[in-house]
Amino acid sequence: MQNLIILGGGYGGLRAIQKLLNEKDVKEVSITLIEKEAYHSLKTEFYALAAGTVADRHLRMSFPNDVRLELKFESVQHIHLDENRIELANGEDMFYDDLIIGLGCEDKYHGVPGAKENTLSIQSMRRARKTYQVLQSVKPNGKVAIVGGGLSGVELASELRESRPDLEILLYDRGENILSMFPARLYNYVTEWFLENDITIVNRANITKVEWNVLYNHDEPIETDAIIWTAGIQANKIVRELDVEQDHIGRLYTTKHHHLPDYDNVFVVGDCAASTHAPSAQLAEAQSERVAMLLNKKWSGEPYPKEMPKMKLKGVLGSLGKKHGFGLMGEKSLTGRVPRVLKSGVLWMYKHHSGN
Image 1 (cartoon, one colour):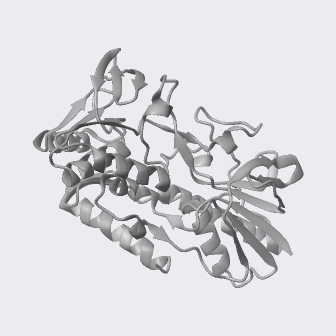
Image 2 (cartoon, rainbow, N blue to C red):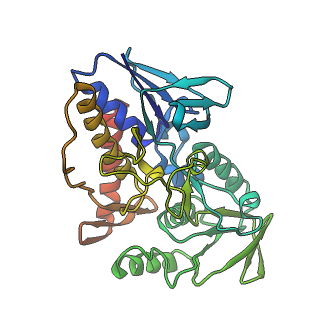
Image 3 (cartoon, helix red, strand yellow):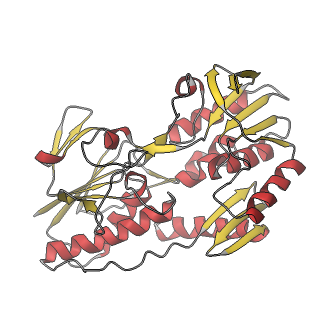
């Protein structure tokens, strides 16, 4: 009996489970998912939970119910690669033949004093829920600062504008413009939308310190009622602690077959795996589909393909409230209602295909 452990029930972990359980040949295999929450959550939508436009029950999904799958709701304390052993927070040890690491990411604070202790987050459902509670308690006409002008910061700012029209919202970004990873047509469109909707963009920001409800930009204090940090990610702490080669944000380098170079039974997916692609839910899913295929071959005694098929990613979609959006599909920039409708459709399809 092959014993597979999957760490993390995010987009990568869930897709690996779905693909493996759908295979007719996967019989002599026991799959254990170790996940600290009792559900899969739609992390790409946490900005809406924090802003108060979506209830958290709409962002939770059940894991598959299958005799071959054991669900263990517990936190991981340490991964012992040389012993094929997972140490859990409750002191229990779990042993594996094969391992998939999909523990996701956490905020990266870039060494800014006080940032970790004095800012809110949307990196986990629990933290997004806390952010929602704080934002809804902000007094009328209060001031909210969002640090980081990437996709998360932009979606959060626009959704918050819809939820709380009274608030003064400031978005701080260290670049010349927000959404710097997108073509000019897209970031110009979003910048215009922000201007029309009274969201202040502070470009070339340099956050030097954070105190409780005080943000220091170039050492100048700005008093606020809430500060939310969306200025970068790093791999999960458990992953960063491993003594293997990592990139600048703690993601692990893997072979073309998605396993660690010195551990061919340890596969890494999603925000824990170094990649030339931008981090996304669909990247985690695509990697996990390949890992499921490789495990199938391994368990059947077949060799891995010499060349892996090209990864097909469909592009990126972002929302500006409930009616407008932006996106990049291949080389094509999309703005307006169409990308917003597409994003809603993708979310509906995801829930529908996952049986929720």
